[in-house]
Image 1 (tube, rainbow, N blue to C red):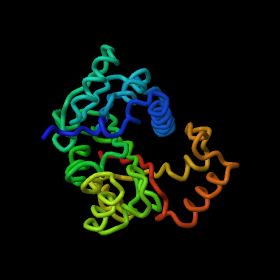
Image 2: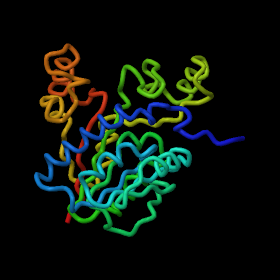
Image 3: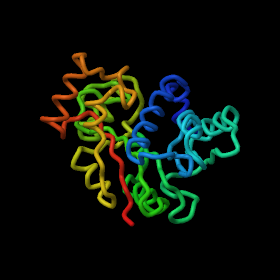
Image 4: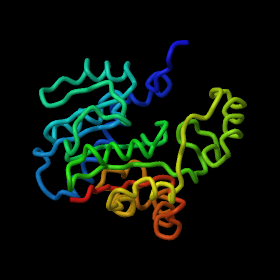
Length: 247
């Protein structure tokens, strides 16, 4: 049976405008955190897919490496984004082919739910980060009214056997592959790091962090997001944390 890669199932990874929007938010968070020039920093983008985000960030950082097990996506990245300081490798984020304490920044944006062992993923990120380095960690919440990948209500909350049945009934596949964690599960997953929460700041300052297209403060969606983040934080659909490795 021919292996199905994520890039063949999710065409949004080729959406230049959409991926660059995400890259602008990542860049704004890094600039806010470091408060200085980023050119001296090395960066690893885990689960980089087609390389659009890594390519965008390479204009602002130093060495940039993107890794993914999705071979067609990496091939697309290599063919379309060629700069001296950026490279793309077919590699597993649970076994990063770089030595200990190699990178200043690691990007892990909506990756944890796709890997067989999320704890091993975070252990590898911790290993390759330099002391004082940070991981930009964007993560979906299991407690979510609408599952973000397959657009089926309550899918991520259901017990896995029932989730598999719902996937089949909806004609979306034979099983539900993603493994989301709740807010408390995510806290446990990131226990090796010191967390700086950017979720609240981003929602309160959508223009600063380039998310006005999604949650403008004067929109109903924006006001609802502010309410949830202040009064029901464990129910946020997703989180953006900077995870710092201790010295």
